[in-house]
Length: 181
Image (cartoon, rainbow, N blue to C red; front, top):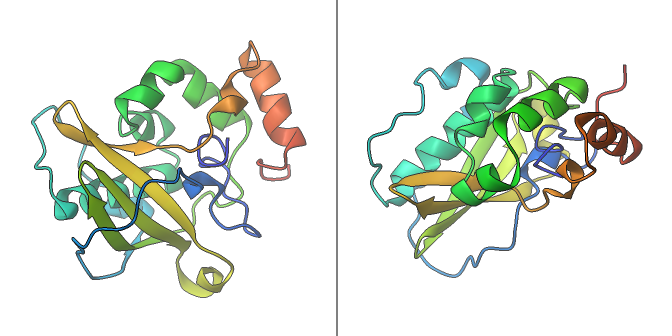
């Protein structure tokens, strides 16, 4: 649930529960340098249906958009930027309900997306909280190119497999992924 819900639940202590993504190979060399803070307003464009280029620059743009939407509380729109495999595993209604019931510990904070590495149809970026919180930790986040677009691949979607939204939220709270209320 790390980035899945914890993606929704970035623990300030472990940084981005939201970006605790899979172990995609980070061995190639396509790198689009610049570190950019992704703030809630940075994700102004709505995900479109037009095919995206299979480039590091396009993948970085989607990564920034995903984390900007997530940070801004635009959970339904953030779901549209998940990889198709993640969307098949977790419906948009469940994604939204669980994230609303278990708000991220990093809600409203900006993220930095940097150090992109593109290998084939997988891109891995380093994600940190922006500003003073940046020194707390960093996480790797994977994005894959499928069906003409880049999509975020949460490393653990098990938090959405408890049979009901209520049970998913309870499990997320028990795991410490939610902001204390």
